[in-house]
Length: 368
Image (tube, rainbow, N blue to C red):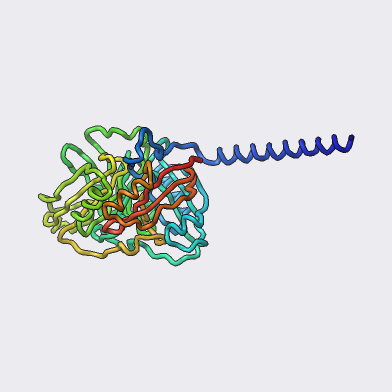
């Protein structure tokens, strides 16, 4: 009897110790990264009418994830909210060998719940820059991400100190009723970042803007703006937020680096579209009529380096995918269930635009 009591005591002691270790590990993991909110959940949705929101995150494929993390923390004022490794399911979904190792880091502008940046560093695999030696009029893939700036000149100088350069220095101009300054900079891995500061009227909707905002828009250069418009509006069901024919332009300096003496001769239609018709998580496409360059759309796939893709929340991935297929859209990557840290389990699929822009739509089915 005494031996039985001793055995029970030891068992309970070990169990308590293990539980304490689990509690400690849970606390450490919870406290390792700051808490955050995301925009993946939906309310009052119908299976027959799937909803899509502006993109939750943009994905960069980078050659040095540590350097990239430090850059965006320092220059943009963002924070790392998750670090980990890729997985074989995601590799297969991206049409890669299952065993390719990768590192990931997710950053956000503190207190913002959308417009996150996911950095991915693939290892032991051949890669090319998607937009190698790219110029703003080269088509294919994603050209840039767009950020609001608190102090554009300071952010411009910060990026320059990190080895980046602009297609021009910051330019202040009038766009309708808006007095703005803007610059587009290119740096590591061929990635381009556009920054804009509103001088008047007062910028609204960015309460957490300290240095640079969350990613609110992403631009690609289209070889055929009409085809892109048909794809996004008639096929994906996005709504037009803004459009301009891009005529009556003036010669001189411009943020896209078009030669000053011909800037007024270039017709530049611009469209901004969004699933709900707003400018948070929107997609912009521009056609530079009269300028011809490279077409990078065939390179705009993993594991190549640069801006890889945009990820949009959807309320029902299967229903939305069915809608798109009925409208003639081909699923580039079929619906796949996978764990997507730090959100949880998702159903996800991908399509590509006529310009090779990789778009993913993900439904959160089991939150972490």
